[in-house]
Image 1 (cartoon, rainbow, N blue to C red):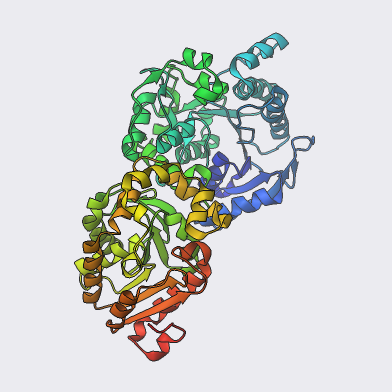
Image 2: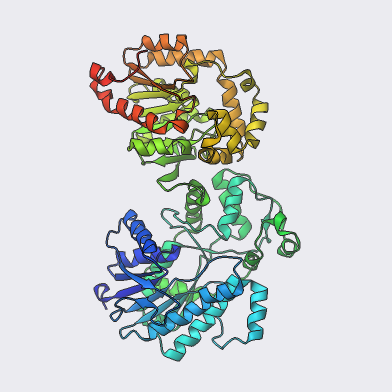
Length: 609
């Protein structure tokens, strides 16, 4: 059967595995119908597919597991059904878990039995629950299993047995995949699954993992979601895969301590040395361990029968992606998206000059924002989005970037020379970085936009000189208190939550405090002013009316033949927080007019210096 003759129905199509499966099927030319509970879920799936370069949206079908018909829509020519539906959530009541994961399986198999052209029903089970005996469960066995494993894992084990038994009884051709912990795409790391091992990765990022659970043999295997999806698309066309179950995992996944060390080294974070045995975790209170009891059964040294899956993959020329590379990319994606807390958009880690750097916005955009203190690139996201071809990067050692102040020269050189930064928008301390880059690399930076450039403004309070005191304050400050200090109101508290989270991670607060102390040094301020005077390109200064330039700063700018100043009424030192639209408009207008080389019309609307 050719790909054009195949018609796949995907249940749970809007879920993590389901949408990658729809994408993989579509890329091979298979016609796909997506069964969703409501049109909103389907719309999310269609948008996701478009964002991933697949404009051929699947057919939109409704599914209701409570109805005997199951699917609303035309299904007679379906050749394969993929059951990715179910509930993946710890802490569910047993009856809820059984409805979601056991009763739904019965309904799916019964539906598949009515399809006249069906070649295969593929069911997603799990590596810890697959291979169940198809014999019916007694009530006693059910009670004991749910008590021992918890509702989620027990319901998946029962579903595995029910699936096999019902499919055999009704004569449905079936295949089962038993995936390990499904992590991000092997090429991009993309994942929005934050349960399981992802929660420990988050603890490493935040520096809150005191000890590694389990021992040196604890094995929590992983599999890349795109590999799993491609494997599943091949099953219906392989007769040998009928009535077979495959354990999909990478045998080269490091044991849990090694996996977490791999992530720690990639994050430039300290790996916990202590280990805590699982029996002890079970005895300790949950508020102390932060471990969900249902996750502890996954902390095992068991190995799994992967020979048949490896043979199947080899037969079809499907290569398992490198485990360590996939784990690093997945860890990057999780952190870049703040483990689900970040807004949607282009977010990634790069490495200019070898320094691990967080960046948001359009990759390779010529306009680059260098944020100030004590905030991060996320506070500039609305301005970046409004500007269009722009991106914001956290300076070394700040926000979510690694590194330190000593990395600035090589980092800035690579940022400009390797990534195409031609218009540097520097805010506060970022303005210093922008000026240093422009003067160190003559002829490479076409334009400078300096937002609240501290070296042309009044000195900060004397307390900023005491780095130790500032570090202590920043490492404990809450988002409301920081918002009030920076803007005079708590209205921007939500905008600053990510900055507060960054300040509590690793050495970020210390680096921030030392840079704040450096801003009062007369020599650095004098050097920056001298560098700015030597810069021959366009200079646009943006300040708030509540945080003006000093008379000396105004006088310096008056000597520059290609400089303009924009004053934003009512703004302070952080206009990107309080007046993002005005900031974006000011930067965008000047960027668009910079090519006019001083044409008086290009200066229209600018405040006189």
